[in-house]
Image (cartoon, rainbow, N blue to C red; front, top):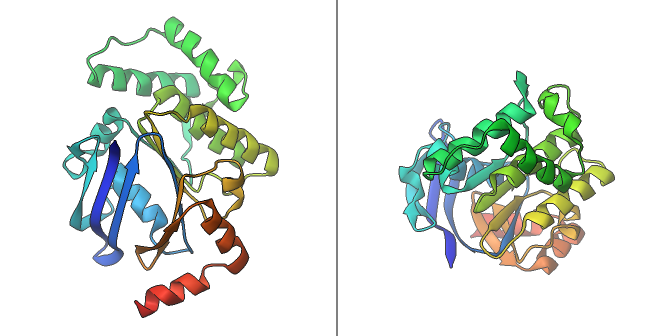
Length: 253
């Protein structure tokens, strides 16, 4: 079943075109990798899907779980089951991880007509989710991402994903700045959360993340559009050749 369907998507920031006709279908149970050079539109696509107000959709359509995604505000997209793991997670001094996660979890429950969980019941749930990222409960008393290392911030994004259990998770360069141990933990967490009713879009520059999170499909964006799609072997080809051969083809086209 098509969970996400993007048709001829064009988007701009400050009237500057960035996406120039993206079409993509993601079915439940699939993992798609989005690759491409700097400035190609990868992160813009992720931000547009999440509803970032800095980007204007100038043409095309997006459906998510059968609904018009472009008609939804950012919070409505989250309530519907769309999650974005940020390339640069923000720090929120004074707000504990436990409070932040419980508020987010309960907002989604309320939007779906379910009762909120009290702190005790939520803590029981949280203890299980912490195992996904190999953390103990002490991390929950720290302020959200405040004083966290780069690896801890990325692990915290995966913890949020584990707690919120989205239908579609978009990981925007989650591997950037990670050492090998943090990369393993993050990737193992993502793999634990894969499922037949969920889908994942992994945005990355490099093939190394895909050694851990094996995608069903790889797509290369250049010049704001998808110029090549394939399987895991395409990522290996990019590792060997770089992007120039594809960006040159895109310029000619």
